[in-house]
Image: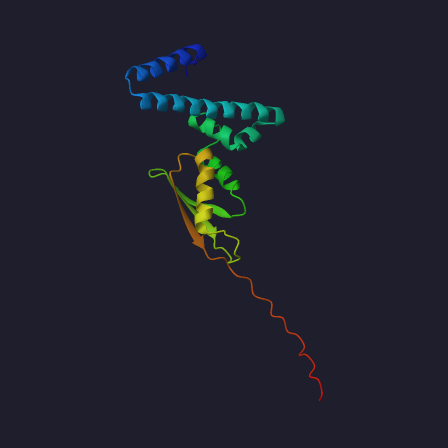
Amino acid sequence: MSAVHAEQAGRRVEEVLDRLAATGDREVAAAAEELVRVLMDFYGGGLARIVELLDAGPLAQLLGDELVSSLLVLHGLHPEDRDTRIARALGTVSQHAVEVAEFDEVTGTLRLRSAAAGGCGCGSTGGAVQQEVQDALACFAPEVTAVELETVAAEREPVLLQIGRPSPVEAP
């Protein structure tokens, strides 16, 4: 991998922005400048997080951070394989037990199994689970382009039948 020099990269960005500005299309030039700002914010946030996590502890903390992990994956630098990163992403999905059924490398489709919601009224719908999974995977495993969630009916435990004494009938 060739080294990227900050000064050369900065000059190159300026040249491209100048060429876009020279076209006279102000919307295109403004969009390009906004794109550069968004990318700088993204990378700056990632680097700040790396420094913060290095102060706090080992590599595992870096790899567990969504922002840092996404930067590493984006540049092909993530030391964990795809399956490990998928498992890490699924581990961030709060209060939902999902397991990998299959990953199709050709289509990028990840098939998951999830226990059916128990009707508790807590809003744990399949759609909410799927969205949470997709959000986590976007950071840790962007090679997953689609998620299919199979809901499996959970085995029900027998209901405990409460037998009580009849209430005494008052004598007339």
